[in-house]
Image 1 (tube, rainbow, N blue to C red):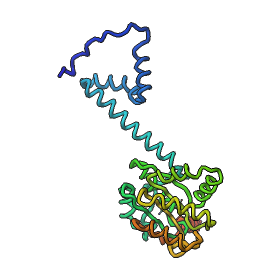
Image 2: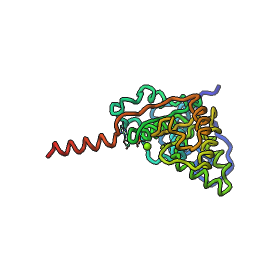
Image 3: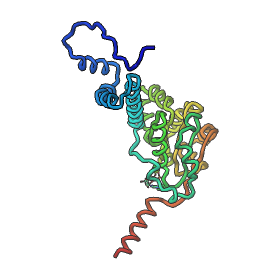
Image 4: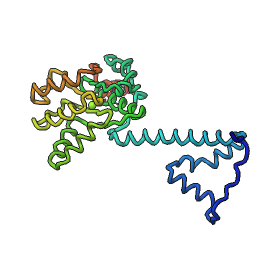
Amino acid sequence: MSDPMMPLPAIEAEPTSVPPAVLLANHLKALKLPSFAREYEKVAFEAAQDRADYPRYLLRLCELERIDRERRMVERRIRMARFPHTKSFDTFDFAAQPSLNKALVLELARGEWIERQRNVIALGPSGTGKTHTALALGLAACQKGHSVAFTTAAALVHDLMEARDERRLRSLQKHLASVKLLILDELGYVPFTAVGGELLFEVLSQRYERGSTLITSNLPFDEWTSVFGSERLTGALLDRLTHHVHILEMNGDSFRLTSSRKRQKDKGEAK
Ligand code: ADP
Ligand code: MG
């Protein structure tokens, strides 16, 4: 082993007029190491001050590159997920929704259910935080390294019908089957046509035991037939979805309603 504190032996370089810093920048760009390129001078200065040897200097640069790369990948997964807004559990008031099993939700935020291809169904009336919870679980999944796609049930059915008309249904189905977590918000507000229901059923069947699906709905299971229009289809769908499922019951008051009532009350008292 050579002593890492020893200066590097001089290498007979090709005579060139290009300064080494320029060559280095080029190489690091080709190797896709932007944090190396950005930080190597500063880290070299710090390493010299701390009397860190060459391996430690390289280690620091590698760590910076990996941290930055992980951050960029999380950001990329968040962009790909197409969340309508970013919501997290930091801004979720569990006390306002006592029917929701907080321990289960926080466990789900760890993301292991996605590794085990489990599903989550959040049920409850409007304004009880279903979308907020779905967005926060989606964000947590992106942070844990899982690919996510967020859509509403109506938008997905619309996209599937459009893709079918434009003869690109297969590629959309392939994409939907490949994400680790598919979030389907607001199942139940709009009933589907027979074709729409079947296309959605196909997507969910293709994901069965291959990926996780999170569905939010204002309708209890026994009313899902009214959305799909077919008892047979709904039965088969629920059978697959609920085989490995965590149910989040959100039956409390509407957060919107409660907070606007509270605002009005506060205003009244302030008068
Ligand atoms: P749902 O999808 O069940 O209709 P949302 O998740 O859209 O309800 O919630 C409505 C609004 O209230 C959103 O802005 C959401 O962030 C907020 N909200 C709902 N529940 C809570 C809660 N427990 N804590 C903080 N904000 C909440
Ligand atoms: Mg909602």
